[in-house]
Length: 285
Ligand SMILES: NC(=O)c1ccc[n+]([C@@H]2O[C@H](COP(=O)([O-])OP(=O)(O)OC[C@H]3O[C@@H](n4cnc5c(N)ncnc54)[C@H](O)[C@@H]3O)[C@@H](O)[C@H]2O)c1
Image: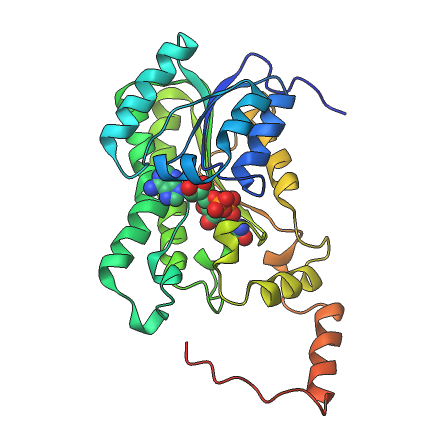
């Protein structure tokens, strides 16, 4: 087993809500690999979730911040610098939320105030994190920043709703800021496009159980778990991947390169031949 991949490195992890969160698994893995961390989430998520337990487990401190607030982010980076006595080496942006999804507004009946919030929370917050960090010169040279994305940025997946637009924007921000940070500071910025996982955010996606089954049957390696995602992200924070930047990297068991697999075909054929199956649901969007 590889050890100490992140020895001596310091970072900020956004988005650990509870044990199922992808960010939670990343914090555990980073700790195991010798990193020190500041954990952050919104005040509400800190109250409702169990981030304090993660902080105890990983020897981290928790600093509240709403990632849509430039003011909160300024305080977060200041306090992080004081805590570590210097800059950070890595940042994880693991943040996503859609009010349209939460309030069950279909894609052809979006509430535009909710859409603005979806984009602000799930995509523009990434720009805010990067901009505030840059203005404070908060990231060391050869540092690494990763945000979590999903294949709905490239392809239409029923039920993903306005989060598709948010993910497309998120990936674009990684490229646009990746150029600036790479050019000036040798800092790399990437997004990881992960398989579906039944976290709090993941459970909000309409038809998540069917989606999980479909992607698992379609992917030659099966769905990637949150822990496997975390293990991959550790390599992106490590010095072994110093020339990868401005990329959207699929961590999905091969799903993104597939059309139809024999396992998915078998299931589809079985349901076509099924006499007792209920009639198709009328799905308007
Ligand atoms: N679960 C999946 O199927 C899946 C697949 C691909 C990508 N992702 C992405 O992974 C990331 C993490 O999601 P997760 O699946 O671990 O679910 P999660 O619900 O555990 O994490 C989402 C986090 O976003 C935080 N958040 C929401 N609004 C915020 C704000 N204003 N400021 C700061 N934090 C805020 C929440 O408090 C929560 O901790 C998201 O970007 C999500 O879109 C998830």
